[in-house]
Length: 190
Figure 1 (tube, one colour):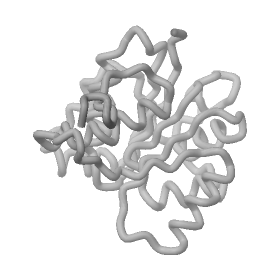
Figure 2 (cartoon, helix red, strand yellow):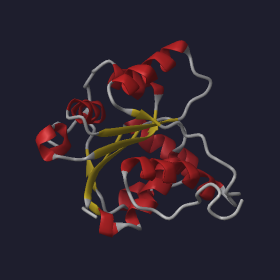
Figure 3 (cartoon, rainbow, N blue to C red):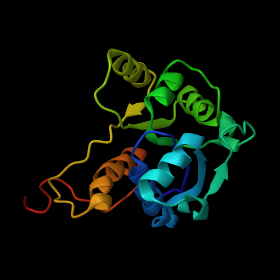
């Protein structure tokens, strides 16, 4: 399997546990990863600290880029990052991406991924949804992106919050084309 270059963006939507579990799982698959570029919004850092009680994202061994660094490699299609995951994805970020507003590195990278016809996965985490949100999701889908709501599943009987978040993250990793071991419906005789 060819190693992948991946962009992970974390925005200020509630659901930092999803980003944490995603990072943990990426760390556990170095044989599938060529490079992970990370960009976090300011709100994402604050929400992470509020929800998880620490700022240990600073300790991750990935390359972090400032949200205003348009010199980051994935600000251009020539860098050939295959996949971008925005996890969690705020409704504001979704709106800017769906309307082509590239006002920071997250939205610029998403714009690049869409224009290059690569894989963009937005892990939206808000409820209820307004018609504006739904129309923005429709626009992303029509442009080739994937909306993967942070809607955990329960048939694997997750034992804790991280296991519950992993039901979403595993789906994201499947969509991104990674080979992972995860609960598969009816494979265990259920």
